[in-house]
Length: 144
Image (cartoon, rainbow, N blue to C red):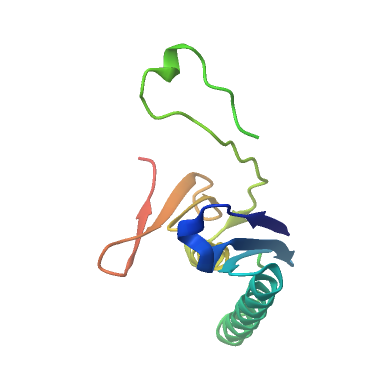
């Protein structure tokens, strides 16, 4: 859980930000909430977190009813060359990749609240990217 205070007077209604990231089984759940004070932001984040967990549980129950034997499975400093106005890598994330189906990847992407998800496809054994399309559907990028 991370608390962050924004000192910008233009965002007085969103002065405090709370991010909660946790694992529920092998699924990562992430929520972010902002409010005028720290306790209100925490309350909003906890409410969002509870809703996400409830939604995850409902989806997992539905999947087990329809399919048998389903198993769920610090920033880099910029170099002198990169400081010329070009976009820079400011954060690096590392995480363990467990094989999963595209459907499981879609659930995981929704639980962490991202627009895309990089995963190891259990069927092909290759890395793939799942993403939200502008039309509201999902797209899958697979290597050839």
